[in-house]
Length: 82
View: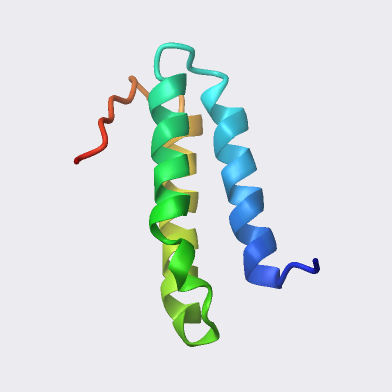
């Protein structure tokens, strides 16, 4: 299966978040769960007409990754809403 450019970017961002989460053991499980939930929640956006929304979510994720990598990162708590 060949991945599109956007799919590669999404997977790269996801892997980067997982790597960055390793630097914060107290928040690692929450960061990982949030990243996985975000991917699953937006999985249906793979249609080509939703490229702009996917690009927006990639930019948003990149900013969140920057915050996670920041020295000012104080921790993260997240619980999935049911």
